[in-house]
Image (cartoon, rainbow, N blue to C red; front, top):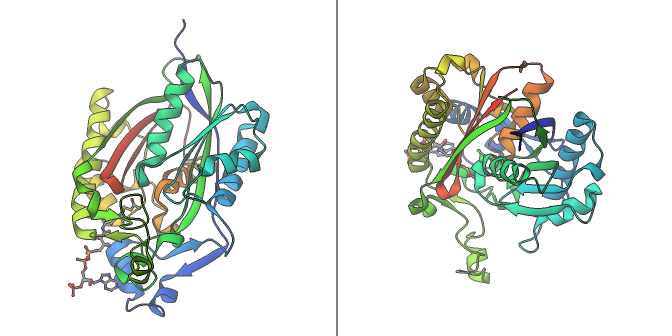
Length: 330
Ligand code: ACO
């Protein structure tokens, strides 16, 4: 069989209309624009409207990606949704999205939870499923309503997160040397407690007392996460460059998970790739977990920052603590 590769046929994103600025947060908790900006690089984030769910944002992003790919819902036979904030705990939000998007009922769909690395994990999964020959075209979505699990009385976390969705449409190509060239995934599974929602899962179902204590909200040991994030992202980026015999100066653009500007600057220094070749939009979105990379990918494509033949490196980390990188050639 002739070799086939997985290529991105279209991209789209959606961000809710409401914007929560650092000044707004300073009225809610003891913080300041200066603190948030200097420690994280974030100025503002989008927040979903009441009643606006992860599925609504995901559908808007996926519709934009289908238009961009010039394809119809009927052309899709696989849907993977990376999220930590599905509409319901059960069933998977991908089923709701499959229906709202009008995909065929014989389009396979499932959710994938690898937190902020979720989009890179989902990309790899879709790529393998397409390469199997059993699927022809896939939609991969990263969508999050993090405002639903954020404690807006906890200044150490509430300043960081935002809502949104990004999507890509994937297909197969016989052109050699293009598409998703490879991925490098992993997890520091011993560090689950550094970033988690402590109650509401099957090991500790929510109780009136746990809800009163706010244990259904995301908790994070930020400093420890920061250190592991830098190490994991550097390792994932370096490994994939080595695997593909590429030098840092051959990478046209790095799209990192948008969590903290200082994390991105450390990776830039370590890899020897200057900051002007890193795409940064966290000032406008905050950390949107699995949505951050596909939102950024759509923005750079629409801004014409990617040319044919360019290499783009995606690199992420998140709760778990998961991490991953992906190398794309356009
Ligand atoms: N405003 C003002 N002061 C604050 C705030 C705030 N919003 N938050 C914390 N502080 C205070 C702390 O209480 C502390 O005060 P103390 O020294 O009196 O105790 C001081 O500021 C310093 O706090 P640190 O936590 O040491 O600040 P740091 O420089 O580490 O920055 C931050 C904190 C931004 C959270 C950083 O650690 C970080 O970005 N970590 C990585 C988090 C991350 O990226 N997570 C992503 C994964 S998300 C996912 O998968 C869903």
